[in-house]
Amino acid sequence: MNILLLGSGGREHALAWKIAASPLVTKLWCAPGNAGIARDAECVALDIADHAAVIDFCRANKVDFVVVGPDAPIAAGIVDDLNAAGFKAFGPTKAAGQLESSKSFTKTLCRANNIPTAAYEHFTDAGKAKAWIRAQGAPIVVKADGLAAGKGVVVAMTEPEAIDAVDMMFGGGLGAAGAEVVIEEFMQGEEASFFALCDGEHALELATAQDHKRAFDGDLGPNTGGMGAYSPAPVLTPAIRAQVMEQMITPTLRALAAMGSPYKGVLYAGVMVTKDGPKLVEYNARFGDPECQVLMLRMMSDIVPALIASADGQLKNFSLRWFDDVALTVIMATRGYPGDYGKGFVIEGLDDAARVERVEIFHAGTKADGSRILSNGGRVLNVCATGKSVTEAQARAYAAVDKIKWPEGFCRRDIGWQAVKRETAGD
Ligand code: AMP
Ligand code: GLY
Image 1 (cartoon, rainbow, N blue to C red):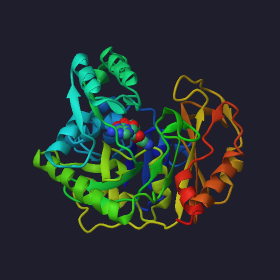
Image 2: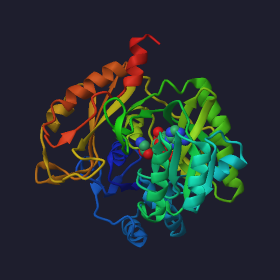
Image 3: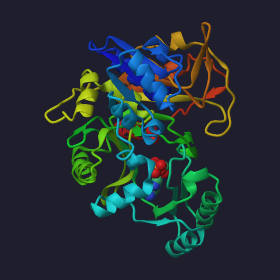
Image 4: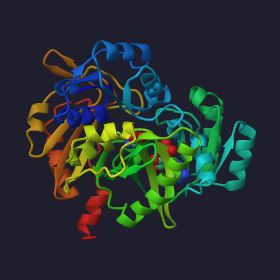
């Protein structure tokens, strides 16, 4: 079958790598792709925000199935438009995708269905928001309602910080995304990522992961899209996973189906494991990046039938097999990320790094220039490794990182620290 994958990040490289390994695939394209994806798929220079252009490409090339990687095309309704044009696609419709694109939609759904999450209020007015903050006190969390490229959340440890965040958001600091604001209770605990493949009615639990959102070692510095991840996440024990399925995923699918917007695609729950049990931090309507990279390395089964079963509503009785070994990924980013950074720096040593035992390197923001690889974004490379333990996978990943010559790049040196600590303690 002919498959078109949409996106250009490390998540999409991992998906391309896994999809390309399927014997069901005749031809795989990726739009727009990157220098690494070009090894696994034919990259096409399509503007994926131009849905008519994507549909024209599908018609001209007899595409059988479209896999949507990132959140922006989902929020823009690419799946609705592809379906209306007669093409099958993996991912939720725009209405179901509101689980990610509108925090107040999700909060309302949680309240109506008793899904455990932080207590919250929704505001369209700065004065009322500030009064509520003063009444609650800090720590407190201020969130822009719309999609804000990971910059829409301020975890304020003090009241003035929270007030500043309200002024910034209502002052237009995040554009339209900040016109409405959700303010919520600060949840204390360990955070992890839970993934379920959904077909509108049924959910198939995938592997778990934990990512590292802060830019610097010791979980310090600004929030980023994610600086590294590993799978599985031991904090999500079988008992907690059962609670997440029962208390979050199942009622969410039921509620969306009842609204006439059944959820198909991967549902990613950011979960805070608190002393009162798991609570939902947020939903995303796509695979995590970089969590997808470690999930793909651990998935033993062919992914293509699973993605099609999700789109076709056929996940009941479906199962996937996973490798027991753990996987870990270290993100190499351009210095300055998540703030301003330069582009076009030469990266060397990638072939040497990829030769380290059980290492796989996925590309995010890269561009080919003849035989050279240039940096072309904030998050640039995902250096991944597998092993019997997180300690082992971590050692392999950093051995590979150390072979990469890229002075303008940086990475955290402590990815997987929570799990390494547990392993060292024999926990
Ligand atoms: P979000 O975009 O909603 O996932 O928020 C980004 C990050 O902020 C999350 O991954 C958490 O680490 C943190 N966060 C969000 N909401 C809360 C909360 N209510 N309590 C504590 N931390 C939070
Ligand atoms: N790794 C966090 C995310 O994909 O949103």
